[in-house]
Image (cartoon, rainbow, N blue to C red):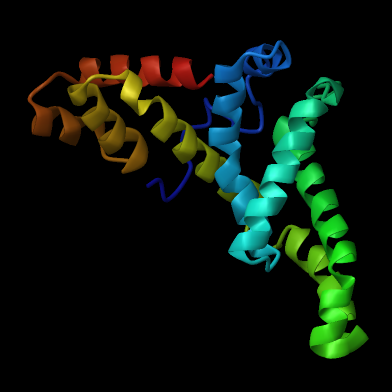
Length: 198
């Protein structure tokens, strides 16, 4: 997978408005694509906040149910508005609801002191670290997820090019030699992939 996100021509903070519009019009394929793209990221956010697999699964279902029902409420009014940010807010709110709902579970395990510690998790887990650029990590993650979702739309040779160029960051000259094709062929595939990602 990609170690460093070097291709700035694709920005995952800008979810395709066409895809969102189709989902708003009850296009099942569009909504399925959104869920496939973002479900692993929702899982990562919850895991980072210290939730168990079972709780993450339940919370994810709740989040995507609410997102589907409230999709019309997401609007891109400014450049900084993003679907990912909106979804992140839904996850955070559901996580807080989950903590409130399970208050007694924490009391039974370790009393109110444990509950107070748990309530501190959202602040620590949701804030961006100064040492690691969380947004860039999520860009890389979503880029990889999007690549995996569209790969099957390409033939076997093009899939090898996608893997080598976009997932392994190999030099186009090396790929051309390995596959016995011209560099131009590689750039054509890259262009098609980037257009599809957009």
